[in-house]
Picture (cartoon, helix red, strand yellow):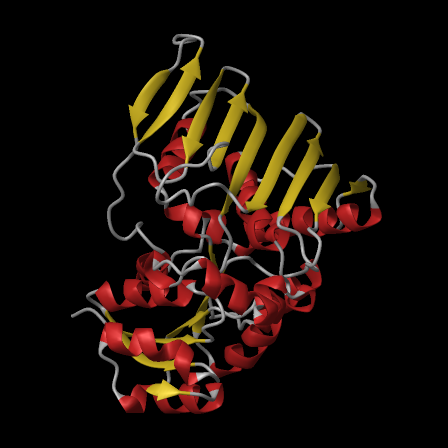
Amino acid sequence: MSKTWRIAGIDFEHMHMGDNLRMAFEHPNVEIVGICDPNPEKMTQSIDNFGLSADAVFTDYRSCMESTRPDIVLLCPATGRHAEAVEQIAPFGPHIIMEKPFASSLSEADRMTAAMGDEQRLAINWPLAWFPPHITAKRLVDAGRIGDVLEVHFYDGNRGPLWHLADKVETTAAEVDARKPDSWFYDPALGGGSLLDYLGYGTTLGTWFQGGRVPLEVTSMMHIAAGLEVDEHSITIARYAHGLSKFETRWGTFTDPWTHQPQPKCGFVIVGSEGTIANYDYESTIRLQSRQHPEGVELAVDPLDAPFQNPVQYLVHCLENDLPIEGPLDPAICRVGQQIVDTAFQSAKQGRSLPLLP
């Protein structure tokens, strides 16, 4: 008989908590035993969505952990609080799924991994890692369909982090304006800005596509609009021994990519020695260009089956089968992505190219 895995969701500062709890709710071998946030209002939607009783709702993480004793904790704090959150929760012994990005700095990422015990697993959830176009592209890269990867081009973002809630429930312009002054997304001390929010997607999956290779040098620029303290647009160039890759982040796309793909499209273009792949978010096909088909062909994306559809399925699968965390959820891959993010942030601040930070 399969074990029932006890899961708690702690810290609702990122709207993805509702999405991640839904993944837990829909898993046949998972029970949501508790949720926690200092602000009870942030948990109302999840209480209603998942039929949680009052004794499963907490405003203090210690009480939540001691009362529910979860096997797995979903964490969704502000980016600048990732290290603090892991250091608070790890001593209780659970495995942790931390919502993207990895951290607001490399030093904080290292604090997170150091806080975990030898028997504990830490997985970093990048929602793009579960998109069929990107998984299909990786399979084709690994199969040698485009030769050696030489370049990764990434453009991604949305209208802005306050335009939607969990389950992509839309807000209004008035609500965005009202929430912006108090939102951690716009607070530089808490890891706000599009670069820290989205660049890790590109650099982590980009590192995955490139087989773990690391750049030599990074150049980045940010645009901070009048009246704001954080960027809503950044462009980063990473120079590798084999070529250049570009990563662009944007809050303020014309449309959200899950409703209508904006222009430029959100997603990736991977350039290899023998071809190219265009794999865009939310699309049902990818475009493969090769020596055999220089005109390009549209290929249907691979269907995703359990346990490779979301981070809850995947972590439970790894735990049940004593498997390591691999791919973009692996903290080792994420650390390379974070190195690029940190170097990009410093490059933009200093206005010059920088060697990759160690």
